[in-house]
Length: 354
Ligand SMILES: NC(=O)c1ccc[n+]([C@@H]2O[C@H](COP(=O)([O-])OP(=O)(O)OC[C@H]3O[C@@H](n4cnc5c(N)ncnc54)[C@H](O)[C@@H]3O)[C@@H](O)[C@H]2O)c1
Image (cartoon, rainbow, N blue to C red; front, side):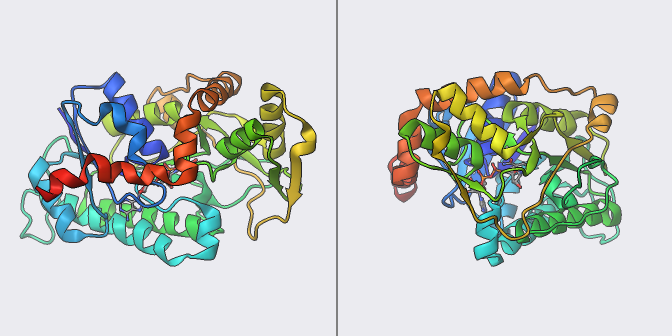
């Protein structure tokens, strides 16, 4: 049985991962550690908050004392580190928090894992760890930079990040690699393409467009809308992470993608068509600086070595996702009104005070 620390579990992918685990591997203890920044929404997990085998701790991954305490209290055996500042636009406005959370936060977690799992922690050269422990760093294909019209990112593509967000993620990947090489810590890095699915914060392309379409608001599209991303349903990302966590070879990087390249403008048009809206809602706005043109993932390693494959087609995944946002309007309204931030106070704060 794993004692699994999931950081950033109140965010989009972390929350979906906890749900996925509850459904597909419910025997493990899950400790969700999240600082509840603007992107953390515990309301998304409200129906499992009382479950056996699930704990939530509000904490910042940069807080070394707290992280060490969490490893000890729950005897953590596995880590999936989702916690990050994740929005490229925000990283252009305020890069600093991206560097401290995404890089230093990761290093603090690696240190806590190393200290808790090493069999001879007083020997600085010891590379002996407990059996069945693993640190999985959730990274992104954005660390590879941008592609031209041809080619795909493989695990050996040189890192060439273009935004403060992707530079911070690339830095964290290198720190993870160093802890694997220097200290022998059992580490995996996964680099996934763009995710879509339920519970995504509406600053990201797909939930934003669905919401605006439903409300008849304009649909802001950057530049010519021809930026190409390789889209994967979040549930397929979750199954890939579990596959790497349980079967990945320590020290290895695994790309995760579903071979679903789509231009942003085509996604917007698909959403318009599905919801019966009008294309006149599309408003082209000035492109953001350093906007990568194309990403595409070569997923050969994870599919051939670990036997993972995605279960959604893009068409099925999008139909289900659009329907989810239509059927969960109150979730979206709470996010947009800021009401979701009160959830923690209502559910958790009184018990901490007593
Ligand atoms: N969204 C994507 O398409 C995508 C694709 C590939 C990889 N990723 C990576 O997956 C991870 C999760 O992405 P997401 O889209 O779910 O992000 P998100 O922004 O929805 O969630 C991030 C979570 O981390 C928490 N957090 C932020 N700073 C923290 C800190 N200092 N301490 C503790 N918690 C903190 C936030 O409160 C939030 O709950 C990120 O590491 C991201 O780089 C995302």
